[in-house]
Image 1 (cartoon, rainbow, N blue to C red):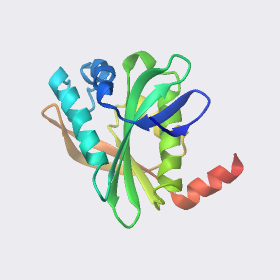
Image 2: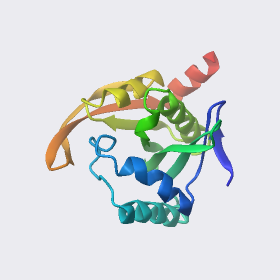
Image 3: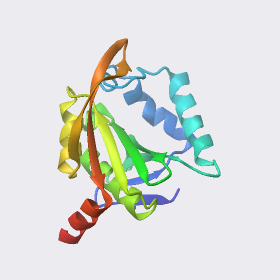
Length: 184
């Protein structure tokens, strides 16, 4: 499978059917998915997710991009990252999940940076947004490290495990990405 984006440590590629077995250990982990509106997954849930991603990829006007995050040194799947085009005028929303054994190693930050580059370079988006539960400190750190700006908090906008939760909204604009890229 072709590499979509890469750096020295990781690469992003399209999801393969066999990836479900690598996704399942973290998508079924209660701690890993505690801020997600879904999960913990059964094996059937994980397989359904991968099959749906493959179907969505084949759509004529593709609006959902889910990529596998692979750590290069061990050739190990460490997570997945997703972007959905919310507005055909140039707005995309990203989300990511990393296997709990790889938390705190900078891989999520690198994956989000690669996805942001993909959004602006290949999808020609004007704006990329992401949301995070205010209690999900790891996710918030990732979004801030890549240079996304906090716009505010949506109050009790997401039902997670039977409880309404707030979402912090972060974004990056095309001109901010261009400016940041010019400094590198």
